[in-house]
Image 1 (cartoon, one colour):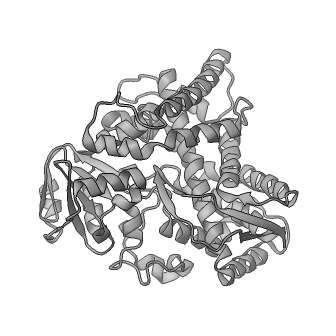
Image 2 (cartoon, one colour):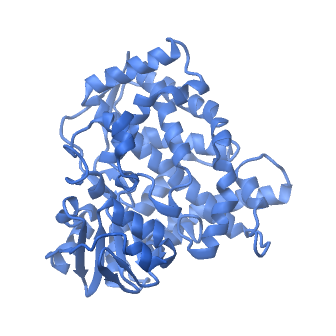
Length: 453
């Protein structure tokens, strides 16, 4: 069946990157984004050979669909993601493969149905209002990335963990940052297939941070299991989940794997998407004015109501366009476990595949003026005509992020509350430099001043 599906894609002659292994490894250590071959922004397929190992960058929507959807069972997360994320997330939803991933996905799916998500809107709005009130009391510059981390973390804790008081938001954010900071060394070491014990700068701090995060969540799970309390939240759902084939329940360690996945990935990516959105709006006042007009028209000048969040298409499009230019997760990595053909290229077992989302989102064959901020791309006919796999802020295929609708709804609610109350201005006109730390973070904080409208 895979061979028949592959035949539907016309054979492509992949571009072979001429970058040396030393150049790629140097880029990985400096900023892994720079390791993406420049040709990925213009070619459909790019072959790269680094340290004696072949990799394929897939940059064409039809080929991405062929690989990630139709050949999903032939691909695994691979050694790179196991080394980078495994110590923190174990075998949770983001890192597991095969049957273990499938039953976990089914177990948590009910919490992310539309009806369940709309029930979270009051908490999302309340968290945004708390941030608004805090900003109105401050005269110092704001680190917008940090501020959004605090806001989305409060939402995750309230909606998924029943407002648990066991978390120190600042300490959790710091622990996540400490773990992600040396990820460039993790990428480089994985590519070189070095021993996992090999030290690198920041390794001890990273693993100390993981220990804190896992111990904190482990204590919460053990306390809830022992108490028998039912709060109808993510912890309850994971405690009650079982493999439909074997009826095996999740162990405490497996529950921690998934809680940590949602707590880290669930607030980090949305926060970064929002930070980049505020950055872009501050530099595009005409777009910001149009968004404000939409919010005022929908709310009638009153307090934002939960049912109004779904009636803000331009606000949503602004967030979507920000994630096109600055995708929170800029690269998808897979490893071939069963050989198959892709666009005329024979993919062998062990070969690493990259979907460079950042390059796909700015690809010269897919987007008109790809570096221009234009939210209209996500409105009306322009959005309907685009290939589904040309825009991948939440991944693609069966492993599309289960929290994509939650994140989008959350972002629109936060934007609607904050934009109408506060005008943000960048502290510097110097363009921010994005860097890859698993997620797409600004190299330096996005500092902005806040003033009441």
